[in-house]
Length: 388
Image (cartoon, rainbow, N blue to C red; front, side, top):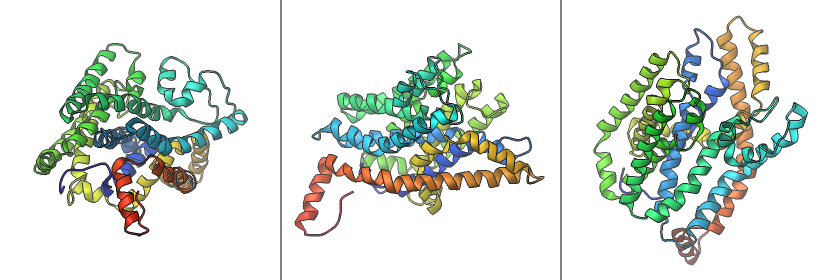
């Protein structure tokens, strides 16, 4: 880590970490669990990939919000740029479900409106579960959590303003989330509420935010760079704590009591430490994040996440068919999952280059002050260099 980080600095290793996160989530949703299949055992903990996304989101969003404090059109630029990044592909996916749904047995109700408007986690915890038939959109709960975070955190950063106070708010939010989970666990019917709601998943987002503020100063960046051993110890401690939760619960599933008491916090700390290492060239986390195929997967991770779950019931039909072609179920699982991943990757790449990129280019209409200044300098030099 050479010095303080700011929001326009592209860090290649974080692309690879996105790739790791989406592979984890994909395996959790798509790889079958069978006795004696070690890949299935590992895939059972893939839900934690969502936590890696949360920590990354907290890190990147908090950094953007802090760096652009005091700029003109602070809220307009932030929310417009988020909308251009997230809405188009999501709207395409929802449109597909709404169009194809009736053919697959989908029955619409008024509760589907908030479900599709980034409130699916809240709607489900109020007891309203859409009937998707042969389609599946339940995974969008995490997108709801992130959108709710954006809506609340931008005004909070704007009001707190000072780096010290924002950092304190991050640490308080992380502790609050941990304590709130224990309160909810006093009610045996709460495991899915704990898993899906922003207040009980806030620690991952807030630890990412705290890390973003630490590396926003030269002193903080140097302090972090001098503590690689501590960060590696935190990663190891997080892995050990997660494994102990699995042993205690006899399962890696996210709704187990031990996992919700300790596991969520363990993976939040693990991934925050891993990202802190990935920011520093030469570390194992940075080298892992810079693996080319992981970076490619990370580039398309949003589209993969959006589309991978929708045809899930058809995928299971395909997997049952593949099972009948071999005596070795693990072969059918690996080949079938790889084929579905390749198909989803293709769909995500198509959506990225045809839909996402079209709208991402519109970010220039909501440029931050430093980007506009950079654009003027480039124009004066009469070059064709484009400002991202």
